[in-house]
Length: 333
Image (tube, rainbow, N blue to C red; front, side, top):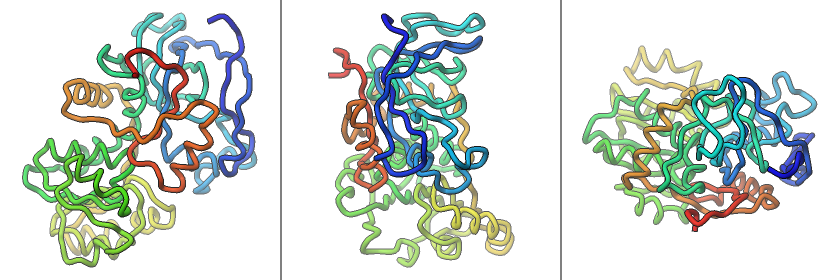
C-alpha cells in the first residue's frame, strides 16, 4: 500500500443511485480484532439498495437525516494487508471473503477494515468474483432452508424471487437436499432458473402461484409480494413459509398473523433473521470449491459503475449476483 488515500463510493444523503460518487478518502486503520483488506471484488445486495434509499424506515433508525454508513457494501473478497494487535486468525497475504453487515460495511472501496470473525479463508481455486458473491445471499439461502425449513428429501419447495442472489443459491442448495423445486420470477429469468436445476418455473407476471391450487412444504420468499392470507393457501398442512425480504407492511402483517395461522391451520409463517457467521460461509466455500454449487454472476462492474450496479439491482434486471471488481487477477479471468 503506497498511499494513505483510497477511492471509495460514498454518499451523504438518502436517495437514488445518482447520490453516489467516487471520492478519495483516508484508508482505514484496523482496530484490535480487525484486519485491513485490499478489496478485489464486492457484490451488491438488496440491503445496499434499501440503505441507499433509506427505505423501509427501519433503516433510518438512529440515522434519520444522514446515512449511518457513508460507504455501502457488505460482501467482500480480497487480500489481508495488515492485522490489528489482537487479530490472530489471519496474517498479511491471506486471501479472505466475508459479510461486513455486522461490523460496519464499507465494501465499495479499495480498502476496508473488518472484524476477523466476519471473514473466511478463500480457497486458491475460487476466484475473488465467486467469493464476493457468496457471503450474504448464500448464507441467507442456507439459513432459510436449513434453519427453518426442516427440508426432507422429496418435499416440494417454492422459491419466490428465485432469480436474484438468494434465489439462485437456494435452488441449488434445495436440489442438493433432494427437494422438488418450483422457482418464481419474471419471464426473462426462467431459462436461467431451469439451468440451475429448478423442476418447475412460474412467471409471476402471468400466474399467481398462491391461486394455482398447488401446495408446498416450504415457501422461501425473497421478495415478499404476497399477503399472509394468500400464502397460507399455498402451504400444505404442517408447511412452513420463510420470509427473507419484502415490504415492511407485509413483514408486519405476516408477523401479526403468524401465531393465528400456526394455531388454526398448523402452518408456520416465519421471518428469517440473518446471522452472518464464519461456519455457514465455510459450508458454501466447500460447496463452490467442490463444484456442487456455481455462483451465477450477472455482470462485473468497475468501482465507478457501482451506481449502475445498484440501479440494475433495484430495477430487477440482475440475474443472480452483480459484482463490482476493483482488481483483476489471473484467477478471475
